[in-house]
Amino acid sequence: MKLILVFLAVFASFVGVSQDKIMLLSGKVLQGKILSSDTSGVNYQYTKKGKPQVVVLDHYRIYSLDYANGNSEVIYKRDSIAGRNYTVKQMGAFVAGERYAFEHFNGTGTVIYGVLTGALSGLLIKGSSIFVAPAVIAFGFTTLIPPPKKINPEDVVDKELLKEKYFLEGYKRVIRSKRLGRGMVSALGGAVIGVTIALLTN
Image 1 (cartoon, rainbow, N blue to C red):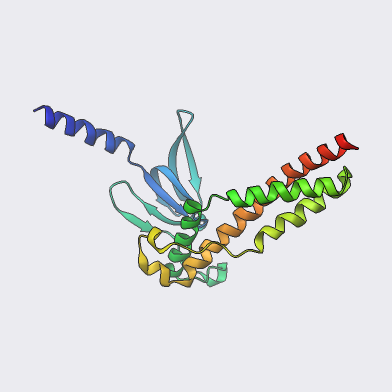
Image 2 (tube, rainbow, N blue to C red):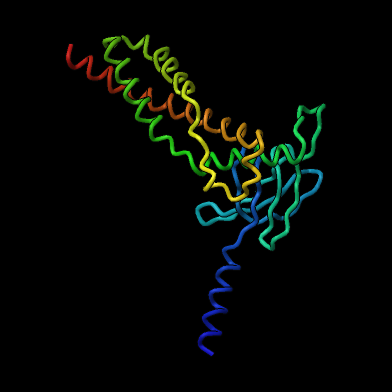
């Protein structure tokens, strides 16, 4: 009897935390409760700081809806007039590549590189703040030069995706975006350090 009660308690807690998922075309996943999906968009509820929030998302931002009960629905539709030239399968692989990048790219190397190069630029310009912004932008774009780290096949559940070029394209898009963003921010932080040191030592 006790085992049955424990099982029911665990099952109830699992059901309570299970959530619907919305896969965006950006590769990001939103979790919450899908309230409705119609021509006006997708209404979903999520919790923020302990309070329920309701948001309406336009269909053009969404690839698919995955419900907690196991059902799923692909929202994306090919529309060449709207610039959506990928088929549903191609876009699915592209989004999966983006998602893989979000889950496996930490950007530590990019941050270290940005801080070091930013600090160096701050020292070289000897506190001339007018040149800081161009230097940060220039060093930020250099983060796009190295090719993205190769995908580890062991980390990909659906091995068929490894045969899809769109999976790799999605992966590269997110890596480049994250590298550029983190490179700019870290280079700016490094430049502040470099300029400060230059001013203090002058």
